[in-house]
Every structure is written in C-alpha cells, then in structure tokens.
Image 1 (cartoon, rainbow, N blue to C red):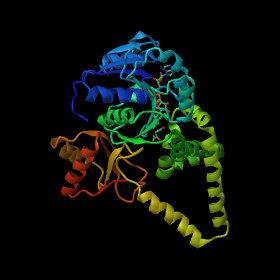
Image 2 (image 1 turned 90 degrees about the vertical axis):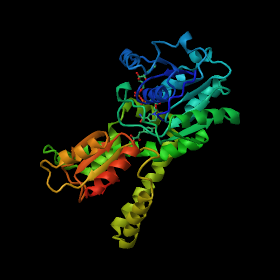
Image 3 (image 1 turned 90 degrees about the horizontal axis):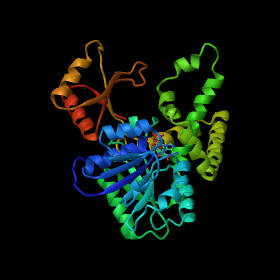
Image 4 (image 1 turned 120 degrees about the vertical axis):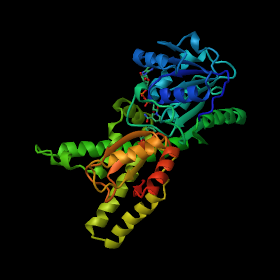
Length: 369
Ligand SMILES: NC(=O)C1=CN([C@@H]2O[C@H](COP(=O)(O)OP(=O)(O)OC[C@H]3O[C@@H](n4cnc5c(N)ncnc54)[C@H](O)[C@@H]3O)[C@@H](O)[C@H]2O)C=CC1
Ligand SMILES: O=C(O)C(=O)Cc1ccc(O)cc1
C-alpha cells in the first residue's frame, strides 16, 4: 500500500465523499503521479481535495476534463450515479473502465444496459465503510484489506476483469467477482437488513421510552454495538432500500419468520431450543474473522487497567517510544467487558499486532474482539 508507483494513469470521480474520497486518497498514495479529476456538487469537498493534493483538477459539472480516463468511479448515491451515465458517455474511450461503488448493483446494471455502456462498465462495491459521510471523513486506508465486490456485465472480457481486479488489489483491497444479482441478495441479507434493524431498534426505543428517558440513559454496550450503523446517512439508506426493494422485502419476511420462531421457543419455555438458539449464534459469530475482511476496520484493543488514575501515561509512552501511533484512546465507562477498560485504536493491522505483543510483554492484559 505504501509503494509509490509512478505510472501515468488518469482517474475520474463523480462524487467525492466518504467512499470516493477514500478511493482517491488510496490511489494518490499508491500511484503518486496519477492525474485525478473530480466532480462533486460540494465546492467545500472539492477545495479540500485540491488543497490536500488528492485531486489535480476539480469541476462542478461533467465536462471535457473527463475525456480519456483509464477509470471513472461513480461515487455518489446509488440513484444519483445512474443519472450521469448519458452525460459521461461521450467522454469514454476504448480502454476506459467505467465503474461505481454503489451498495446496490441491479439498478446501475439495468441503466448501463439501457444506455449501451456494457462494454465499458464493471460494477464495484467496497465492503468497507462507516456511519459517517463526506470527504472530510475519507481516509486512504478505508478499503485496505476489505473485500471489494466486482460485478462484470455478461460480456465483459476476462482481460478487463483481470485488469480491474489487479487495480483494486494494488489499492490494498481484496477483489471478489460476483454476479450483480447474487451481490444484491447477499448484501440485502448482511448489510441492508442489519441497517434497517438497527434504525428500527433505535426508533423503537425512542417511541417506548418515557419522560425520564431511562432507556436512553441505560442503553449499554450491546445496544450501542448493535446500533452504531443507525447513525448512517438517511439519504443514502433511503436510496439503497428503494433500489434493492425486492431482495430486502424477501429477506425481511424471512427474518420476521425467524423472530416468530424464537418468540414461540420463549413462549414454550423450550430450554433446549433456547440454548441451541444462542449457542448456534455464538459459535457462528465467533467463527467470523476478528480482523480484516468486511466491515471490521477498527484496529482496536482493550487493555485491563486496575487503577485508572495515571495508568494511561505509561502505556502511551511504551507505544510512543516504539514508534506506534495511537489513533484514538479512551476509557470505557460502562464496563461492557468484565476486564479491559482502556480502548486503544490504531491506524493499521500491523500497529495493532505490534502493540498487542509489546504491551503483553509488559504484562498488560490485552483483549481484542
Ligand atoms: N458509506 C458507506 O459506508 C458505503 C457507501 N457505499 C456507496 O458509496 C456511495 C457513496 O456513499 P458515501 O461516500 O458514503 O456518501 P457521501 O455522502 O459521503 O458522498 C457522496 C458524495 O456525492 C456528492 N453528491 C451528492 N449529490 C451529487 C450530485 N447530484 N452530483 C455529484 N455529486 C453529488 C456529495 O456532495 C458527496 O460528496 C453510495 O452509492 C453508497 O451506496 C459503498 C460502500 C460503503
Ligand atoms: O459502517 C459499517 O459497518 C457499514 O456497514 C458500512 C457500509 C455501508 C454500506 C455499504 O454498502 C458497505 C458498508
């Protein structure tokens, strides 16, 4: 990821927010000499990207500056991306790969086919992100070690798929080729349904709390872990729900059956099935990778501190003199862990591993999750 490749490459961005900005920053980091061109309706984001030298040229409309790009990334919300296809069309050259980063794929593939752009288009979806939006929250390492779904058109050549996969790999992500229909069913289940449940749970608490607001006050680690993504952009999720409507409705129906099943088990006081329900979930959840892969971009450890007063300084010193940067550090007050009250977040997996070994050698008790 840190290697500087001095290749002449031209990349265009339509939308330079959290994802567009992060991909642009990753490209700048790897391809130092790349020419990066960006269009966004936010002047503020474009100015920030010009001033931190992520982009070479910024524009407030799709114009000639998009001509001759090697790659054009559509990084606005899923519906907005489709509205620019006709305008972009005239700037595509034989070798341009037109791609997107949208969380839903069937809509963009349908528009691509309608616009006759199948020869240029390969869909994309980085399985990494955050509940925060905008260029100001973008970072070069957002897609590092994350799966990156690539959804070709029916007749996309193997050479083009390989070329695009290699490009994604060069940015530190892990390309995985999937049919766009499969993609939408899978993400409907593991991404869209959880976002709907998280928002639903938060709204449910809001509606059912009373004037003392005890639910809001007492909501502990478990509730917060489960609902972090409820802080995501309403505009983005509104568009995702409508674009993947059929899959989401099917998955919701089937999940509601699951809830009915567990409701019946509780109603019947069926202790065996109840045990099975939780232990099956625990086993499967524990088998998922802690680090790397989709959605787990927080490189964090939890350090057990017996005496909190003055206890952080030696840890910060040990890490500092060994050249390990701390991205975030803070005491967890609600004791969501039996042990471990100091949370330390690092910039990379390597820093996390080095810090864990180092602090363990000083007899600190470390937990990861
Ligand atoms: N946020 C996330 O965690 C992830 C989002 N995605 C997908 O990435 C895409 C972008 O999402 P984010 O970067 O999170 O959103 P964002 O809100 O951070 O960025 C969107 C950008 O598009 C710009 N924009 C809005 N309307 C526009 C228009 N009409 N023309 C040109 N630019 C316009 C905005 O000014 C903003 O800079 C979406 O399609 C989303 O489904 C994919 C993976 C993760
Ligand atoms: O913040 C998180 O954990 C997410 O789930 C982010 C996310 C949102 C949308 C996507 O299409 C992919 C990833």
